[in-house]
Image (cartoon, rainbow, N blue to C red; front, side):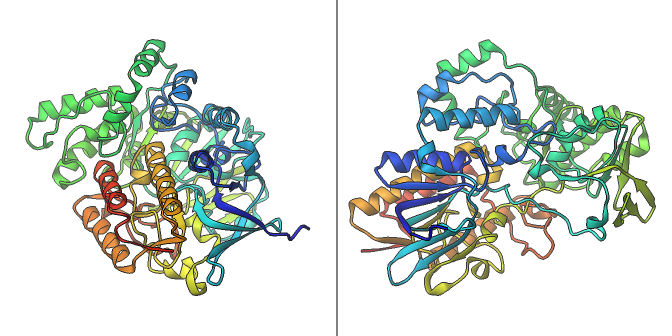
Length: 534
């Protein structure tokens, strides 16, 4: 095995949306750059997540790069919400179009990244024996990329095939004639359950917490709509970047409190947004994620819809969430609730009857045993930090990132970490990331990091890292902003609550426009809050 160390200006970990664009910008600036990717292809999230029904919940005309107008104009999206295969083709096209492949090393799992105090450079090691040196290390590992597999008693004893939605077989799975159990009811379950139900002889859904979902109303993208957006793409993108979530809406926001209008006006607004479909449902009123009373009007509307759609009152009640709507990632579905009207689809409420064990031939709960031929774990991800924690990352004096973040992630702007020079995280904790259209947040971070690297080179600085004080103040500020909202009120993966033993800290920053403004101010003030060294 070749142990010769190769040297680069920049090493990027991950070849999804973030890694590909970071490579493009880094190369354009003249930095020698290598991308290391664990998968056998590019795509990141969209390479791994091939489960049935996998689809983006942001409309395709928005969930795409804007750095190249030629790319925007030439690519033809086929559906309102693009499915996984189409998004993967798009990213492969980007790698082809901009000749990125020569700078990408596939099938390479990064195991270590260590800052060398004596040389002032990073040493990166991989599972296949590579040793690389770099001035900058950029983590483009994604917010939802580290699969969360529950540690259930007896799981290894099950005789049938098991699958995790985040690590789906590339050849696909045929469930025809099988008794299938799906554990989990988050986004991947909401998308996959209706598709699996079309194949399975029997489908048992094990639900711990009911999920709010709004209809996607997906379908072929209207050619006239695509033409119209492309004719004014710059204005379209600029307007979307001024929305809290950086996700444009088909309806203008009212800007009103849900409690300041009549019950009839509220109902009409919710019904209209339900017909439109998608995540902008929560944009109906300005205070839905601030005022519990206002929030409950939206929550009750969705519960009403569930009662209308699901025929069995007992099942409808179990499917109706009782927490704040939006404090967990809201789902966007195609026939999710209606699937429970099918005679071969059954719902098991784990709050009433918890899982005791996985057996050789099924799942045993306190209420009984369910014989199954296959089990699907739709249990999501160790979000925001999981992919980083699975790499042995060490900064100054050998301090491990997992130790520095033992009580929860601490960053400055979600971009840098005190004690870790020339180390950047794209859409890291402490930035808007998962509360936004991820592509907007990714491009914003890539542009900021690229500008920072160019600034260091042009001013002959060797290192940059946040100060401890700036980082502490930022973490406090992120939490103060979150505490103004209802986001921290439930046990969500935003807080790491889905992973046993993980420190519970609200990780994303709420509000893209104000965040982007802050990042711009920091850069304009010669990287205020950072220490730059020659």
